[in-house]
Amino acid sequence: MIIILLTICCIGLTLILNFSAGIMATRIDAAAVLPAQVVSEDSNNMDSLQTPPDVMMPTPSEESQQARTDFKMNSIVYLLIVIVGGGVLTYYISGKVLKPLDTLNSQIKNRTVHNLSETMDIPSTNDEIAELTQSFNEMTDTLNDAFMMQSRFSANAAHELRTPLAVLKTKVDVFKKKHTHSTEEYDALISVFEKQIQRLSELVSSLLDMTNMNDELANETICLKDVLEDIISELSHIADEKDVTLYLDCDESVVYGNTDLLYQALYNIVENGIKYNIDGGMVIITVKTDKKQVIVEIKDTGIAIPDEEKKNIFEPFYRVDKSRSREMGGSGLGLSIVQSIIHKHNGSIVVTDHENGGTCFEITLGKIK
Image (cartoon, rainbow, N blue to C red; front, side):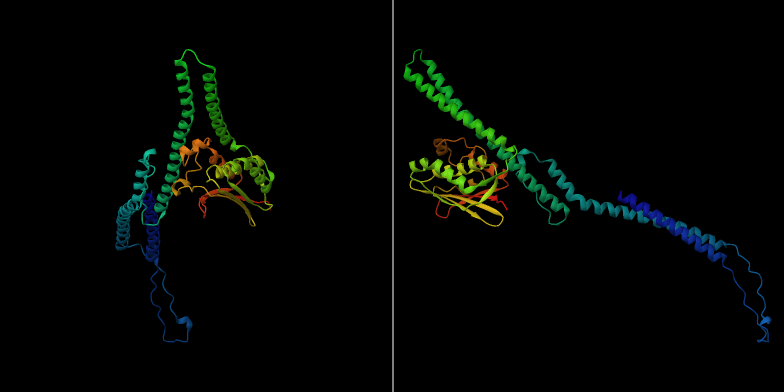
């Protein structure tokens, strides 16, 4: 297309030049050649000036016609030289410029689910191709994280569902091997069934809670102090059992949202702070307010979460300590639901290390103006 455009421009320029040159040559050929005027001896007599003879319009000479023909032929030759030379040069430069794009296209075609983690080399040209490569690398990183999260979710979900089902199946197989059973054996079997069915029920209920997060959020006025005081009162018996002290430092901060959902999110974090704390430890809840937002910090004195685990703790079914988490109960969906609730309230949640040991969850919510 560039070569076609170049050809059109060259042809148009040549036609214009030939047309202009033809007009100029015609005017030169048609110019009158005036003879010199003869002046009489009496210079004071103006009538003595001789009147010039009639002007004759000469016809174009053979040399003039030949010059026109040569000009046209030369212009056509130069036209072809410019088109061919310019076309070849344009083709070469365009190919050289677009070569990185062709390379990028080939690399994109070879991308699959299995090699999304590989990053492409970014050209040092700092042009649009380099920006496109950088954007593609960022996109593949995001997709790879999503695929890895989906893979972990599927594996963890299958494991969580398989465990109670395997227990039930084993108990039933063992129970069937005996033809007669005592009342105690029936009671033991029923107890196992109740425990595992309850576990499956909680798991399904948590999954439904996650899917229902897309429902429209109620726009209620929420006093965080009232919510946190209710949570502390509800969890006080668990804290007493582990000899964990609960501290609350909260002002009269008010936010918009759904009271039940926000209660569930804060309850889950405080409960985890108690469960995974040390005996005689503390859970410190502070609420700080600035001009635009409310910051809720929930700190515990338990075992800190490793840095490499922090980015994964909000994934569904992810457990930092799988054995201890299962002993403590729970489905592994708590923090995932917490994150969904906070995001639904246009907030954010991050986890850091507590300066005195343990973990700190920082929740940021928008305040009422």
